Length: 121
Image (cartoon, rainbow, N blue to C red; front, side, top):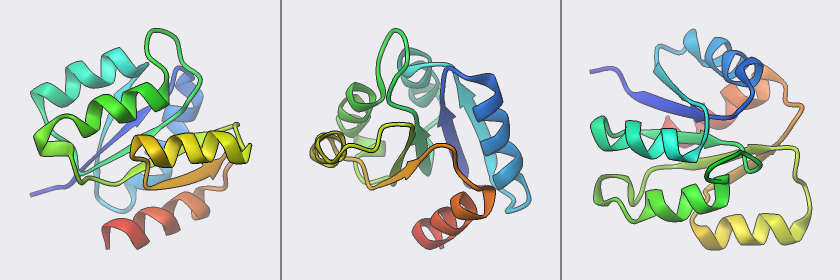
């Protein structure tokens, strides 16, 4: 069975870059445009990893992480924050919410691939 990674970002170009970066690894990539969209999709099909931006309309990334951690099937999945935010306070807030890791945009595709391989094996 193919493992599924969800990428959540209000920027279509970022979602596309994530998808292209990870496609060669054989993962199924599910895209969501914001936190609300992500929650709707996760309830229909749980994912093995979540990669999310912070600054999005409707439901921001840190609130999304908190809500995802409340879903039993997603309690322990890796969640990577992929964001322009680099302040230590934001990183602490993300970790407290349940984020596993942090990548600052702009990112290099090989950097993302390396993190996903390390976390998912």
